[in-house]
Length: 259
Image (cartoon, rainbow, N blue to C red; front, side, top):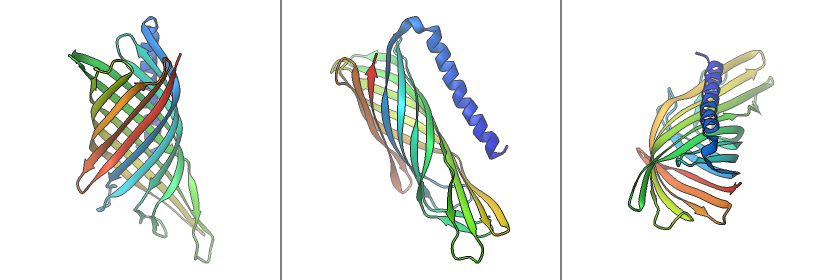
């Protein structure tokens, strides 16, 4: 299956998840408890080994997104978000091009779509055990760089994309009431990524792609939902993803206005 086909498949999967969730919400619209919208910011740092490489390299992404959230009386909370991302890749070597290139890191612009859900499972005294899941698809805008130092004109054009799926248990502490709800979250996280590089140097052309095919990480996060006013809620969490030789990080913060 080609890269274009995989991207189209991934978009269809994300769209199907959104349609299924929207269908459930529509079916249970009489049970809608809350509707909110706002902005969210996400920081995402992940160390991976690309297929064919021996050394690890990093993926760093910052995303600013518009977010819509629907809460049902059953406790299920579903949200969709779409936004703008800035992603930095480092330490990538493209050897299958007419002239080998080393991508040493540059900020690449892109767009991000995400769907997530959280649901309570059971309450034990002041603790609520639940589950949370999220799927994020980020697709980058192509960026070109001139190839200098050659007798003929040349350019290199790169375009990245990645998908992360995460899911796991969440334990919330309810002793402070609905205004402040701290929680701890554990998540299993799978990442697929691709960085395609095209090169033109005079009459020579070539294409090379670096890929990550399902990199697994285990994440641990602390967070809280804070109701600032009757309509404004701030949600935030910070976490780590340990790997052999280091620790990656994740941060998410958002503000929502309830209707």
